[in-house]
Image (cartoon, rainbow, N blue to C red; front, top):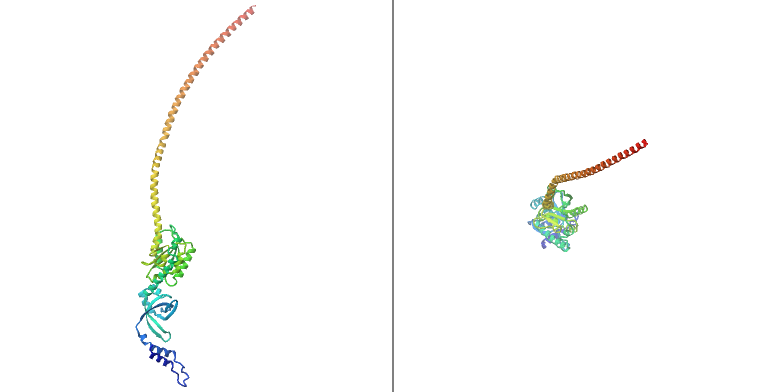
Length: 409
């Protein structure tokens, strides 16, 4: 302020009331000072909007759509300067159409670095402030990228990169899968639709979480804790696509450290097309989109199914090769078995006939021998009988003669 204007303001502040005027104040009223200040600041108030950069603080959203916040300059943790800012509802609507909902909400967060184009305003009630006319998202993006790199450096220094993959093991066929997602997003719908279309019996346990805004970190941490208690076999964290500012919430150091120390494998499907988020770097495996995660999960089942089908075909081939000779041998044995009874019966019949003939011959021989012996015995008996008869006759004759002699005597 020039010396002339300082003198003018000083003169106004030294004006005293007239004698006898009891209603006049002892010093100038606030409105008078503001009018004088407005006159002194007329060049600045009439100047076109200008760009400035700082950190957002004391953010407050009004019901009418306006946003009030402080733009703060911080050095070494101390506030060096601060100005009040207001973003009116119509300007906010215009910026929302130009930048997008997520980018605007990401830039307007407490602690976010922001670049604004604003004009100076002096209000009789609200005092000196800045009226925001435009927002430069590249300032926020640059600050977020610098923050992201520092987080990655700290995680790498702590040895947490790849720690989740080392501490956990993904089952061959994860059946109990925990999902961290926002149910009202397209990413969630794509993920679930892909799993349902596969037809595999994957049990999905949902932990609804915020994936944008200042509540992201706390919401995801609560979801991870919940799924850990449910003893899932795999945790999937997904978020649909968006701009770099929109996806900056996935660079949370707190969530990254929690994932790194989990004994359950974590897969991420965050919509980065080029860069990887901090969560992608610490997870056991990362994918481009939620659909890609679901396809990878279904792919494990399809690959296992294909392996089983190939194994089945190989087993059939090996079985056929091994059982072919055995089948031929079995058929030969069956053929022989069918012919064996006939041969056995013929052999038995021939043997029986032979035995019969031998038996007949032996019987005939025995009968002839017996017949000869009987003839001899018969002849012997006949001879003996004749001798006995003859002897008896002689004896009778001798007795008769003796009797006759006796009688004659």
